[in-house]
Length: 163
Image (cartoon, rainbow, N blue to C red; front, side, top):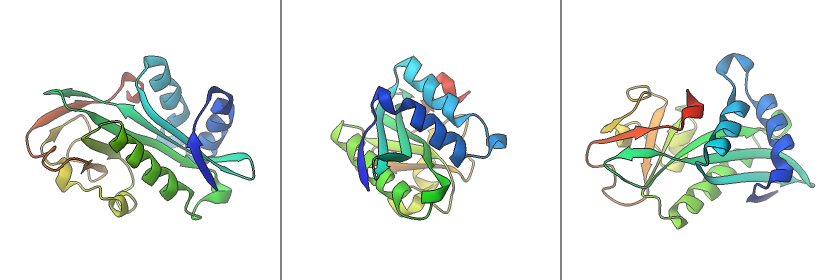
């Protein structure tokens, strides 16, 4: 298993993995990825390869904040069904969080599966002072990469692709 930055040649495989990973009734995650790219708001985009095949993908977007604060948004994160439960998603999440830290981000937010993301340090409590269209949902969680980064009220807006 190899985690690496995504390149344009990966886009078709990323779309295929994303469509296979998500139930169509949950939304158009592949469209979100492509929309964030079109908006120029990709901060970190990684894939996981197994035997030369892309089997996982994660996107971290630049968030708009008020007051200004370097915050990334994790998601979508998708893993091919044949590789779910094998550590691909965890490897992508950890590598992406570290890439965000290296890029100077002070926090990361996620709208995701509540039992999954706390293993990386995300919590609803860390998101308590964040105003967002997703605030107050159990699935809206945050992780401070810099101590105190989320200790004051902040408004976070997702890229338009998230609708």
